[in-house]
Length: 123
Image (cartoon, rainbow, N blue to C red):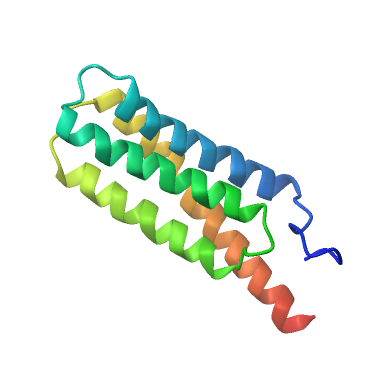
């Protein structure tokens, strides 16, 4: 954390992580707010998921951020992936795009968690 108590310096990997987080939020918000083929009962779920990723994005920019939140985000993305895989495949192409994006998100989250925890142990 910087001396003034605000967000840690955000390097290239963190920037990529934040971009991927916004992409996942955008996909879910698109499905919840714009895509006409989504049943009204499910659109609220997509908005809630997209909003959760937006909150995570904003939280990363505050002094409240803790490395364990990378793990929480990765677990959330894994859970959503399982729900998507075992659910009906209504939006195949969007599902593939979300799956690829989520895989990158999970890999980055796990890497960043391990890196930050290593730094706190060694430094």
